[in-house]
Every structure is written in C-alpha cells, then in structure tokens.
Image (cartoon, rainbow, N blue to C red; front, side, top):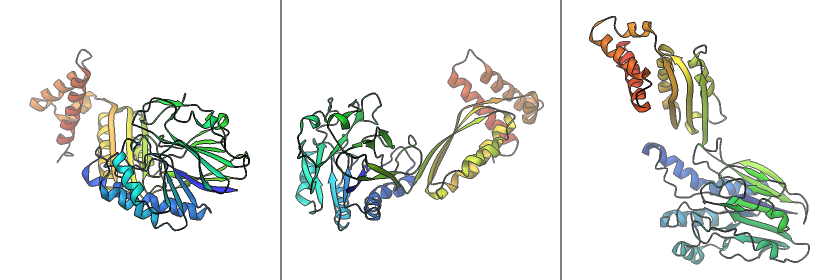
Amino acid sequence: MFRFIHSSDLHLGRRFGNLPEDARGRLVEARHATIGRLATSARDHGASHVLLAGDVFDTETPSDAIWRQALAAMSSAEGLQWWILPGNHDSLAAEALWGRVRNQAPTNVHFLGASAPIEIAPRVVLLPAPVPRRFPGRDLTDWMPLCDTPEGNFRIGVAHGGVLTFGSEDSGAEIIPADRATSARLDYLALGDWHGLKQFGDRTFYSGTPERDRFKHSGPGSCLAVTLPGPGAVPQVEVIQTGQFDWRDAPLALTPEQDAVAALEMLLQAGGKAKRDMLLRIRATGWLKLPARMALARAAELAMPEFWHFEFDDSGLATECTPEDLDGIGLSGALRVAAEGLHQRSEDTAAQPTDRAIAAAALRRLYSYVQGEGQ
C-alpha cells in the first residue's frame, strides 16, 4: 500500500490584479498558507509524500520572498517529502528560479526536472513530465508507455496540461491522451493545469488548486488523498477541502412575478463559509419592473460589505418602465421630459446596444434620485 497527497496549481505569488486592491492581501496570504494545509492533510491521512503537479509558482520570476518562504514552509513539515513538477507558468525555461531552488532546497523538497523515472520510496516509481516552456506544443507524457520499471512496482505519472477532448485551463493545448494511464500502465496519473477537480476513468485525476483563484470553479479549493492498495489495483481517492476562501458564481434568473429581493437573499445565505471568507458574483438576468429593479439594487448594495468581495452584475437584466413609473419621476416639466427621452432612447431598437444600456441606466439613476434613494 502507498499513500500520498496529489495537488497542483498553488500559483504562489499571484497578485489578483483583477480585484480591488483592498481585497488582494488575504488572498495572496491564503495561497502561501496552502502549504501548511497540504501538510496537515497528508498527516491526517497517513501520507508521507506530496506530489505537486505543476504551477507551484504563478510566474517564472517570483520574488525571493515567495520561493524562499515556500521552501521554508515545506522544510518545516517534518516527515513529509515534497515533489515539485514545473508547469507552464513556472516551466523549465525559468532556469534562474529552478537553479536557486535546487541549490537551496531542504532535503525533503525534490525538483522533478527530467522526463525520467525516479524511485521516491521502496517499489514506488514516479514518472514525471516537466513542462519545458510555456507552450510546449506536444504531449509530454508520450515517453511513459515506453518506460520500463521493475515488475511489482507502483507506477505513478505526474504531468501538467490539457487532456485531449477535454480542455486546458491556460496551457494552450489539449494534448494528453485521456487513456494515458492505461497505455503507460500507470497505477495513477496526477495532473495539474485545470483548477477544478476532474476525473478520467479510475486512475487519472486533476486535483484542482488547493486555493481557488477565480469564479470559474466554484467552492473552496481541495486536494486529493490517494491510496494505492497494490500494483494494478484501483486507487482509492478522497477529496479533502483545503481552501480558506469560497468563490461562488451564482446566476439569478428573475421575472416580474418573483420577489426579486427574496430571491437574492436566498443566494446570499448559500455556502458553508463565513461571508468574510466568501467571494460572490451574482449575475442577474431576465426582466423586472422599475421599482423592483431598484429595490434589488439597494439590497445588493446593502449586502456588499458583508463579503470579502462581492460583484453584482445586472447587465443581463432588462427593465420594464410603465407610465406610472415615469409619473414617479415627474408629472410634467423638465424631469418628465428627461425621463421620457431616456425611456425612448432605451427602447429604440435602431440605437446601438451600448447607447440603449446607458439610457436605461440613466433612467434608473434619475428614478432613484427623485425617489430619494440616491442621496
């Protein structure tokens, strides 16, 4: 029997430039903290090896603080062996980075820089496929079927990239055959690049990132605790939650018959994490009457400070504006003229979509101010 932890895509040093500056600090620190959480997961599941299937670092030029603190955290995990595969973000082309890592790595941290078998434990052979450059353009696992290992040994492949017919997160190609574990007689194929959990057959898994970094993959990050009962036996794989933050992308389809605010409140209460550790993006679609639309916007605005990051996207939500709504802006005079002009512009099918959207937003803003809600 052999147990290990499979993880990938730590992306240490990611700056989260797409988020507001005041939201970035804890997200950056949470990525570094994944090393400790992976170590805890290994100990809790009786594993003494952690396989990191690429993109440990977010770039080929992380700061000295990033890579040295990562090595220090791994070094402090007594009894654990760490096996680091270069991915497409931190490929072998980063010669300066990996040269420093090799020179300063503690004895329990191992750099997988060659496509060659390596015995990591008695009767356990690792077959790594390090990424030579950002876009390799070929199947880096093609050597594995031709590689012979002693009979009765475990064969574990580790690679980074997209699987043929499935897709790639950002390595630019889908070139790893989905049946590589079978063709290479692997007991397990540990993959990185895809930031969510994905399985192909009984032996091929993407672990996903241990700490989510975008809305594409909802929920907290995780790793995999893998048990190989014996050579050739089906692996036992357990998903372990490791993420501090919960990223959620929630659709909110609405109709005038619904209570839009109540529907929003249901989404706001979903999730198992404290709101301070949640990043929530709500995408409202459908259509509402103007008063309901404004009530929904107010409710979203009130909820925003409760979350670490909150986005409310109502660009796909249409608004029905009735004569009574225009009366609420003004029965006559300049306000009424302005409101009717904006309404007509927002409904003009000959106008550019962006112009119509601007007019509709301006009408909503005018309604809000007149009703005393924009002060």
